[in-house]
Amino acid sequence: MTEAEIYAGLQKIFDQVFPGRGVVVTPELSAADVPGWDSFRQVSIIIGVEELFGHRFHDADIDDLRKVSDLARILMSMTDRET
Image (tube, rainbow, N blue to C red; front, side, top):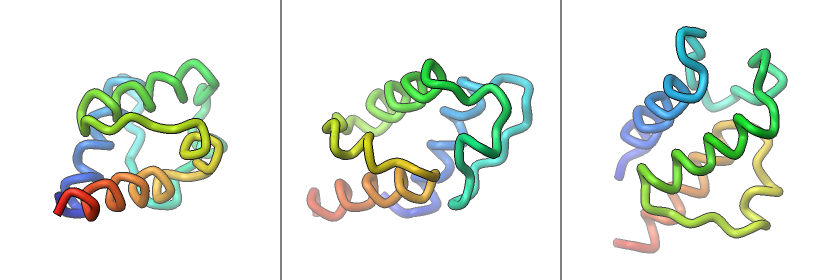
């Protein structure tokens, strides 16, 4: 899976979690940038990623998430291990 495919998938998830808000997924995007990005929505994002990409997160993975690029990095490393 390419980085572009990962970001496209993340955009779909963010569109579902933040409907009608026009949140544009970028590597630097963080919870501080999106009004209403609370713990409930954080869990929704994680569940969406797990369902779409088939990756189960470990607690340590989730603790290290600060911005979207951190999430993409984890997904890229998962893809690298599969090849």
